[in-house]
Image (cartoon, rainbow, N blue to C red; front, top):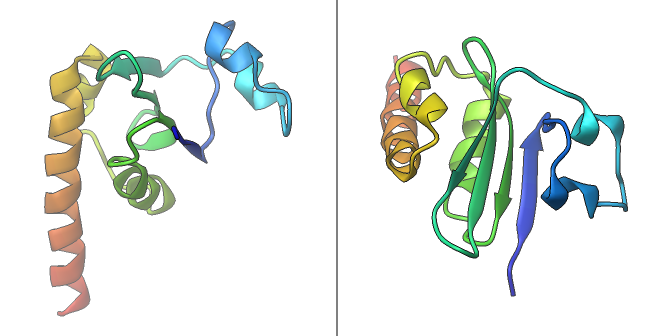
Length: 116
C-alpha cells in the first residue's frame, strides 16, 4: 500500500494531485508559492519539494518513504540547503540522490557539533 506524507508547508497552484485532497484540506495546498519544484522517481513514487530562499519549506512524499525522515529533519531544523539548491531546482531524479547525500553530510555535521 502506498503512503503519502507531508512535511512543512506545501503548496503550488492548480495541481490535479492536490485537488483530490479533501480531508484536512487547506488554502496552503492551493496557494501559489514561487519556489515549487517537482521530482518524480517513477510512475508510482513522487516527491514534491517547496524550496525557499535558503531552506526547504515543505515536502510531499508519495509512495516510497525513503526521503520522508531526511526531509523531516532538514525542514524542522531549517537547514541551509544553498549548496544543493541548484540541483533541487533542476527537478531531476539525480537531485533526489543529491538530497540524500546532503542529508547524510548535514546529519554528520550536526552530530559533530553536538559532541563539541
